[in-house]
Image (cartoon, rainbow, N blue to C red):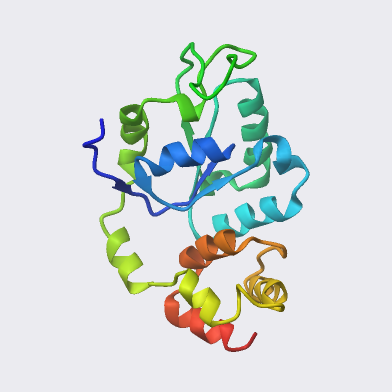
Length: 198
C-alpha cells in the first residue's frame, strides 16, 4: 500500500514505543509521542507533557491491544481528562512483528505490526484539512532552535528548560519533543516572543 497518501492529523498521537511511532509516521504527518512502554510510570515529565498538550488540544491514544497496552492505556486515561482523549484501538491479530525473534506473551501484533491500510482507516476520520495551512503558518523548525541557542550550545538545555517552564511544560525535554509541543501550543510569532525572553 505504498500509494497511500499521508494523512494530515492535527492532534498529538500517543503510542507505546519508537517502532509504533515509526509505523504511524509511515501513514500520517502528526506529532507522534511515545510512553517508552512502562517508562511512563517513572517519567513524570513525560506525563506532564501529555497533560499540558491535552489542555490545548485533544490527544489520540493508541496502545497495543495486549495486557501491557491495557495497563498503559488505563494509566493515561486516569491522568488525562476523558473529554480530551480520543481512544483508538487496534484489533487483536495473532502474529509476530518481523523484527522480533518471538511473538509477544499474548501472541498478538502490536501497533508496529498493523497493516498500513488498517492504521490509515483508523486515523482518517481525524484528518483536518486545515492542518497543512496551519503548519505553513507556523514554520518553526530545528534551524530556529539552533539560531536561538536552544540546541548546539553549552547553555541550550537550560534555555530549553526555561522556555518549557514558561508554557508549563516539564523540564528535561529533548529538542525534538519540545519542538513538537511548541508547534502545537504556540504560533511562530508567540514562539519568537517567548524565546526573546529566555
